[in-house]
Amino acid sequence: MDKQEGGITLEQSQSVMALLMNNTDWKSINFNGSHLQELVMRDPKGAGKRFTTFLKNGCHSHICHKLILPEGKLKLNDGHLDLLGIRPGWSTWKGPIYGDGLQGEELVDFRSQALKELCVSRLIFDSGLSEDETVITGVEAFLRHENKKELVRLGIKAAVNLRKDHKETGENSILEFVHREQKINQIHFHGFIIRWPDNPHPHNIYFYRVGPLDWRCACNDLSANCGRHDFVALSRVA
Image (tube, rainbow, N blue to C red; front, side, top):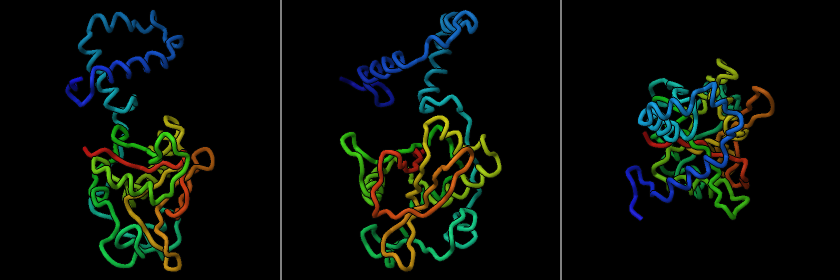
C-alpha cells in the first residue's frame, strides 16, 4: 500500500485512529458543555489541523513545554558533576564502547552538546528492548540507539539543565511532566559516556525518582542489565 505524506500508510492511520477511539475516556467528556461536535462541524479543517499538531506532539497537549539551553558545550569537570550531585574523578570514555575507555575519540553524541533547546514534543524515552525481551545490558541498549541516526542521545548538557530546571520549577519542570504523562521514574543519558579510574566498564549519568518531586542522580554501569523501566533519553532530530 502506498504511503501518504509523512510516511504513514492508510492502514496505519486507521489503526492509530481505532486505538485512539477505543482508549479515549468518552464518558468524561461533556459534549453539551464543550460544544465539541459543533466546533468540529463548523470548522473541520481547523479541527483537523489542531488534531494533526496533537499527533505530531506525540499525543501531548503541552505543545510549548520546552527548556532553552545555554550556548556552548559542557565538558566533564568538577563543577558540572557538583550540579548533578556526583563525586568528582570521572573522565570521558574514549574509543569504542567495548574498549578500555582510554584511547580514541570521546564517546559523546556531539549533536546533544549543540542543542539549543529541549522540547517535550521531540523527546523520546525508550528502553531499547524488543517486544519479546525483558532485559538487555546497558551496552546493548547504547548500541541500538547509537545506530538510530535520526535520534540524538542526550548527554551531560541535557542532564545538567534538566536538573537545574527541576530545582527551579519543581512540579512544573520537564522531569515532573514526563513522570506525570509517561509514568517514567528512571532516565539514562547515553550521549556522554564516562569512566571511573578503578572500573574498566563504561558508565552513564542516570536520574531516578524516589518520591514526590525527589529526583536523584548517579552513575550507572552499562555492563549491568536494564529492564523495561530503564528509559534512555533521546530527542528526534529537528
